[in-house]
Image (cartoon, rainbow, N blue to C red; front, side):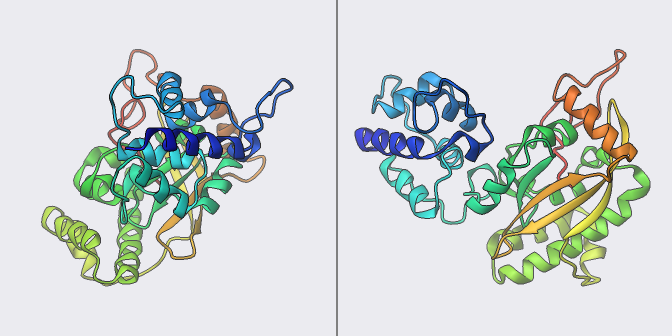
Length: 301
């Protein structure tokens, strides 16, 4: 691993990113042209001391950055594809050509839009419904997404194999969600062609869920672009929202964000949600629904 070059590259990219690019205030006393080290560490989910060591080319703790850490740094520093690959090369890590989940490289255009939705629940997911990155309002509304790998990283997989994943929607809405998920996955599978990842996901779901197998055999296809959702929140009750989808050019990623008509009850509940945030959502001695105080469910729609 080329620690000095890795540190120099991180410093150069940090200097290039402006606070507004990542949704941070400029502030009156900023002495650096780009982000502070502490800000990069926070955006990447790292300790400030560890990130500082990386920039200084130090290996005090003897820890080589993991692929997940490098992917988080690439997102925090808004690296393009070539820069992301260069970062992995400097860290002597294999470039993840088809990474999924938290290790996937979020397309910069979608990430830039996500940064500007600071007060709106939003996240970027793959076409297999794996969450790549999300903002604080999304975590407050939907719960934090799990960092699992393999088929379980897909919310579609959890929807059909784990009843807890469905608790975020009213039971009477479940059949419609099931149909929409399968139709959307049909489109993704055809778009990807002979893709081992989607083939494994579909085969596993057909074995584990009769409901999925029956819906898959209908061959219904529909790319999800816009929908109306009812979200069950442990403190605010049922929140009715519009779910918008913006697909990347290749269709492999999409930005989701949730809104409500001005003056509606849903809009009022979103305002309250901004105050409640991601605090412990258990109330009255009870337990919040699965997925809000743990990383188990992580609903995406």
